[in-house]
Length: 146
Image (cartoon, rainbow, N blue to C red; front, side):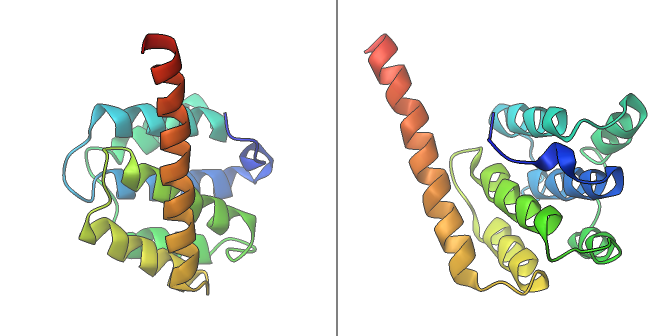
């Protein structure tokens, strides 16, 4: 589990966060096992009610547009603070969950960063962080299973 404060966001912020992750998971019109596992893990961390989780899972079959997600983020009390930044971080992880970040996913990540008034370099740094995390996790498999 990531040591963050996602659960401390308001319910509305957590819902918009999860909605954005649903959008990111469907950019390539596929939902890999890795993406689904990460989505469910992050949805669990969001501590949404069962009815809100059901609504969010509906976005996996009918994903919202990126613009809709960004508009929702803008309606929050402070979209440039924690909610948006955590959403960007986890959108990077969601994009990488299937093993690569394709051009459409990278374009969406840059759009999210731009909406948050953040430089593209932040996205590049998050991608490097994510890659090192996957490598760290893979190392445990190598230790355990050779």
